[in-house]
Image 1 (cartoon, one colour):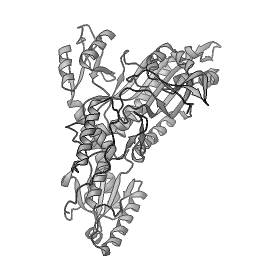
Image 2 (cartoon, helix red, strand yellow):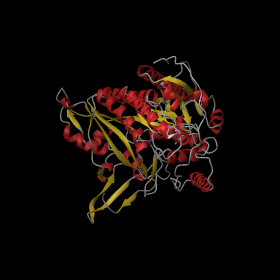
Image 3 (cartoon, one colour):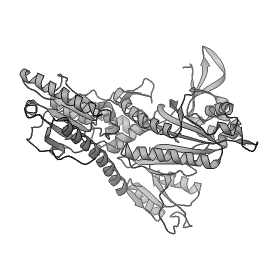
Length: 547
């Protein structure tokens, strides 16, 4: 449901808890360096000159056999992002430009997001269902602002079964129209309300500029749709869902989003109000990470979705829609990743602990592997997601770097001396080098499990605290338009009182490239004057460049 860049419609030709105190016993020497995984094949969007340039540089480095696996983040953020996605095996390119194949590890992160949100949706009374991805074009035309907002990015089907269709079909860009068509059938009385549903689905929007996870022609999301008897119920629902997204971002993804209301210019096509969570990425651009829309009666009037109220009068329902998509995976990458690769918050990591057994002599192998298997069983029994990397094709050093690149929060090393002392070595992904390594952790199950859980909790908290500090240090309070221009030119977010017109907002966008990301729910006290006009202002707005 996010506003996106547009390209003229495409016509398709075919249908289809606290740390434990553990003694340190000894230190171990570091192991070898990482062998390069397969390089990125091509720029995801050939229209982006910077992406193409970054890919050329990457392929050049690869052909020369350079030891550098990932472009440094500070050197080229976009190239770093593309390198990371390829090397961490998150996604690859589909045969149609602008599409992507989400690989198992990337999809596992999406599944972690699904697992949390599914529980929250059901706790708040929503049921999962599924709507067709093909929508009659006449449905899109029924709501004027909706068709105006989405028409330039629609994919259309005109031929099916070898014959031209009587009515062209839209490949689902969002589902408000088809949902309302069905709601009109299902809702007759106030007894049928509220109607609360959600679907996990794919959507298609024909984008001009694409970036893996952040913006692709097809992407995955959940979209919730609800119908209510009163405007108050609909507003409460819209706020409730953005609150769920906010809690998810903070507590699961360790991303300190700013929740607020979109400006009229940025409001979803067909909504009365749009609420959003805005996240600051590592390059200080904003990412719209989730939205919740109060649709009012706009769609119910267009589709005639009515109910008989308790007084016997026919009323149009009040509606909401809300969504989070796979772009949140991109948000996790760009918020927490570093030059070594991914850095996943433990609560969403597909693998929370990787165990790397180490041996040199054949007579050491059996004992080390047995100990490693025992440790894995202990941790798995405690509900921790564990991977035992007992492959023999790569060195321990290669494995260390590979799993660091994939963002696994903790690594456990077990060698012959560890077997003898019944202990392990544990390294944190978020603290590089010796500072993040602890030696001599007992294999005794209660001690080991407590230590691992404590470290995972610390990593989750540390990632959030680090992201909050980064965000807060890059938001500037402004009192004039010149102040805003300076802040935006420095790549920062600008926060200031705003009561100017839509035309003024568009002027800011044209002259600086920044848009109003939101009017935050948390507002400062006191009298305020708009930094653009000098008129009284009730709210401050946040401006930033965005994805």
